[in-house]
Image (tube, rainbow, N blue to C red):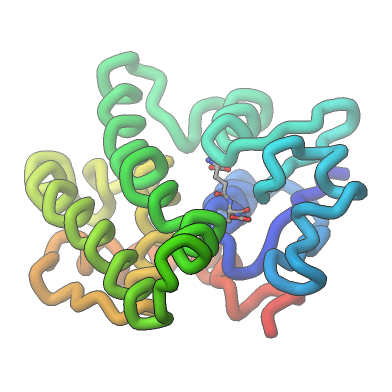
Amino acid sequence: MITLHGYWRSSAAYRVRIALNMLQLEHQHQSVHLVKDGGQQHQRQYSELNASHLVPTLVDGDVVLGQSMAIIEYLDESYGDHLLLPKDAMARAHVRSVAQDISCDVHPVNNLRVMQHLSAIRDFSAGDKSAWMCHWMDVGFKALEIKLADSAGDFCFEDKPSLADICLIPQLYNAHRFGLSLAPFPIISRIERNCLALEAFKLAIPENQADAS
Ligand SMILES: N[C@@H](CCC(=O)N[C@@H](CS)C(=O)NCC(=O)O)C(=O)O
């Protein structure tokens, strides 16, 4: 049985949940509460699985894997026959390019540990944190809206959901959570509506997870 160690509000874990659902893989969840007890990601039980102290971690038999993008590609290649990433090298590179606009350029600067460090060294208030996060999401979405004008249909790439959509939707969840207006992003908003109409995406919504509080 595949086990996903994650947290309901983790956008990186949210990506993997969508992928597991799209691939229709039987799996179970193990909650790692990122705030309780000083952050369970720092406890030995979990850090022995993931030396980075970050969720998610996937356990599939002998395979123990961190990093959501690596996990999703592993699942897709092992079980999905390239359902989530195109077989064609150029098309695959374009999907990865959009996915990495979010996973490499937006998400890391808004991570919990970055926010905690800013609070520690600069006395960031809750309002400062929201403004910081919205700034980086806005920068990322502005670029994405332009890129997607060339590629999007119902989804980021034509009419088939891919790794790009899997990264976009959790980032949009954070945008709503922290109050970023999506009005300037009609293409992104259309893709969001289409993704959230799909069962695989609906099941993965943070509030639908057992550890949601
Ligand atoms: N690049 C990693 C990022 C993982 C990551 O940043 N996870 C966050 C939650 S979305 C986390 O565990 N944060 C805990 C912390 O900052 O202490 C991935 O894609 O898996």
